[in-house]
Image (cartoon, rainbow, N blue to C red):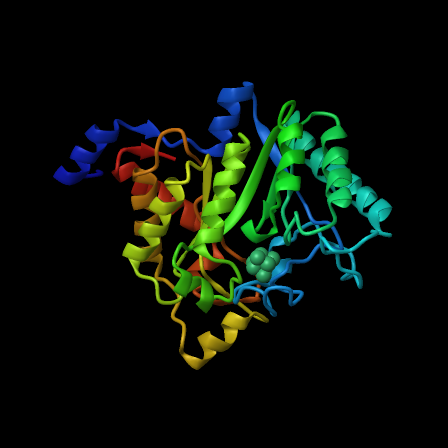
Length: 333
Ligand code: SF4
């Protein structure tokens, strides 16, 4: 028999088994059907934090292949940046986009019967290229059958007014999202993780993006070096202050071949505990405005590249635990 404590009974009453607005629910409400995001990794894209423009080595936790499931090809020898005059690889990139989209779309159609899609430029910094290249890729993605919009993962220091002009134009007919990696609003933390960007700049560009009526999703990482729960929640509230539309939560884990590995091995970095992570995510979701959707509540990595913490191995187990903790608060995830 399940016993419910007095506090939990109060929470259940307070939230009345309310559904959390997941991104799936947001899309179903808006379009009347399930929309899937199709992740894309285009060869040649990199990041100013990796190529030495603002920093070298990338964010301390970055091992980009770990979130590039579609990047099957050999590592490219050429790299894009906005200063390149010509992109001789554009045709190849457009073909790659089409192939990746079709492969994932077919799989989703067969498995779930999905009929509508958002093309998600996921890996690296997807506005860090000449404007003509970006225009060609975004337009091509929107030309595919049953694509209702784009989601573009990037950094705030790689957004420009010209890119926003173009996205604003696209947004007239399609749903255009920009996903910004925020991670934390503490500059001292951003320095520790070699982020190469700062809180003021993030605020400026997120506001500019919202001023164009584009949708913004903010990514936060809980468990960054030196951060306690108060700081994590503070970054969460500062993110909400920017009127974002959606949010992703991610625990910081240590993956081999990253700068963070060194700190971890020297004993200079201790990963967040599962209990603290779950508690912080739950506290965040409880306080989320009802119009802000949730796109991710955790992340995991199920291969031998994960060094620590071991609880990050099983994403599904974590989701189940967070879901259970939310139920105690009267919320249905
Ligand atoms: S901004 Fe993204 S791609 Fe660039 S170094 Fe950081 S995590 Fe890696």
